[in-house]
Image (cartoon, rainbow, N blue to C red):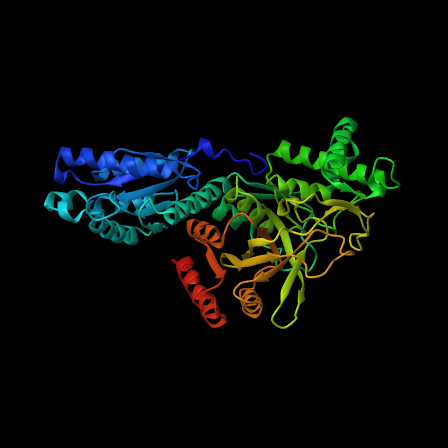
Length: 505
């Protein structure tokens, strides 16, 4: 499916409750009923965006294995939640968990929130022994080698529900990654290292397909764009944005805006026909194109398409994954690039942008549609949307190919308003204060060898990227309020050894 509008309501997470025949049929009926109570509590939460479905209580090895294999085979199942209501011997689970291909969440909870002190007898302990069952299950899980996440707490706790929702969003991104097709118009920018990468390995790890088409195909579609479609897009521009006089219907440069609309019609036609949900362009490879695509890229990202400039397919993939995880939340995900610093002591900031392509999903204000010179690409000046990103929390994230593994690096940030007017900047941009502080953030980012192309998201937090990295079994490095430069440098070194050791196996 193109764009970010994934139908979350067409997917499901299975809820597997662990028990054993040891306690009798009456106890098992109570286990099933109380498991349904937990499932109902999850489904009532607005944070839990994918419906949770209770499966029959898991009581023996063959049943557990059959359920896991059925989850693997069912494309509507994006993940599995396991809850040990009573004691469930983990040797029943280990072989099934080793074969599980869907994300796994161990929910360490229990039916009752408070301890009913006056009514506790041994029958109560037999029925309500999740603390016992969790430890047995976790041991088996560790022996299985299956990647998983553990959430501890009662489902009445909003923070538990929020964490389950974050895990679901990451699981949805992992599921959708296997259908992502990235169209590259041309190759990478010459001599640039971080935009390179192993596209075959990306298919193995993410399931994405990254392939190249000549920019001449896009140019031909642009030249043959249906005039009625172009008129419709132009009307959308007139209705949606503040328009500088030269781009209005009677303006001196209306034809430049019309050509930008032709590009949008052509690009959308190409992406929809090929089932692409992410794409790249390269200002060094424009062929007969009169303009570097900019306005169309901004608008398509606002719909949830992934984008990477200069042939950077990894960033295109990352923006798409972030858009999937943020589906339905305010804000958006966009290409970003650190450009310049404000090094005023005690008030250091980073200004980010990217030529033309920063997405309007980063603002709730009405952008201005401007025509400004673009001293790169050797083509005519292209129209673009100009705005400040809305202030508030965000994350800048990078996906790099570190030769023997992929790595997510994510930095928590606070987007701020410009301290002074920027009348001549002429591009959409964001200004932010990085966590934990400017010096630590920049030093750690550089120590990670992270990209200059990033995804800026204002929809999800760092933990969503962490959860997705766990599911994909790729490296993750966080820069947040808890980060110190020395511990971060240690993590980089330890990860180097760990991932090479695991890859060797």
